Amino acid sequence: MKHYGLLIVLFFQVAFAQLSLPAVPTPFRWSAIFSRDTCGVHDTLSLRLRLAIDKGYYVYKSKTSVRPACPGLRFGAPAFSAAAVHYDSLTGKKERVFVDSMIAVIPCSVEKHVSDTVAATVVCSYQGCTSAMCFLPARDSLSCTLCVRPDTMLPHTGKSAASGAAVSSRTPAEGSGSGARGGFIALLLAFIGGL
Image (cartoon, rainbow, N blue to C red; front, side, top):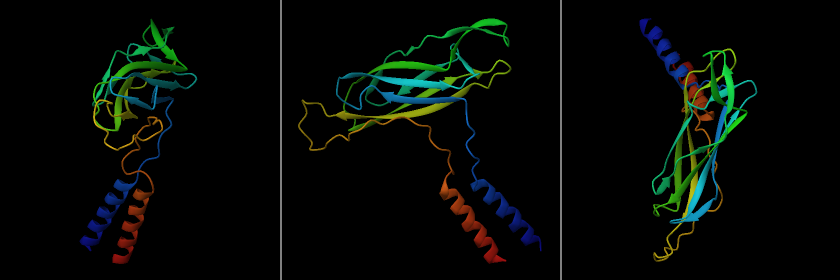
């Protein structure tokens, strides 16, 4: 009888570990896109980041940073859109904040041909607030791809760069989607079959 109790506890631990929580809507949404979808070695372009901010929320400029990284690309300093001056009742000071949206443009250049498609990762740190409270500082990771033509001085490899721009997105949480639910159902059926 003890074994059945242990099996039931083990079943529920595994079953609940496979379930994923639904995504909680956030008042802050990031997006990223390169200024061009294809470029060559030594070309310059820019990476444009946008933070959409819901009505009634704001983001501190002093607590906002973006850190891009990508092999084969060199990034310059980001230029942020203008911030509004806001009296913050929480700190009792005038603060520079982003309201409605924030744009950051990061100049970059292709230093070398690493591959036909390169993926840039951008880590965005920020802290958002309402007039009544502030969220904990947050960090989101975005990715954006770029097609790179091989250097014209190199012999032609016969490969063609993929066409089309890639826009960044948040990566879904691990264990989400129909695969997690399918694993739960399989585990449930195996448990019932064992009784």
